[in-house]
Image (cartoon, rainbow, N blue to C red; front, side):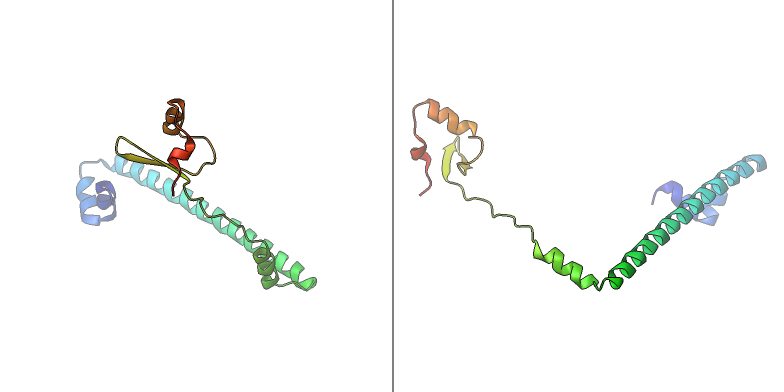
Length: 131
């Protein structure tokens, strides 16, 4: 918690921090805090209303599903029927060591620059095959 919040949330520290303020400055400060509290309450009320609307829509959909004989479990079956398949990463097919650093390549996609440079020097990709 910041030092400001520690002062603001502890009565004795807060009282000591505002002892030099005039009554008018304290009233101004209180009005600003009231405004902030009112805004937060309004935000909380809007959030509660949005949540209530969401729950009402969920209930409406549940009733529609019930009227046609579907259950939530049926939706799970549909979702499970089409699993997203992610293939495993391909193993490297080529390897080269340049300046003590090993660079590997699967042979797919754009050829790494170190392999291109070696190919321009007359080497073959067969020279880099991993056994």
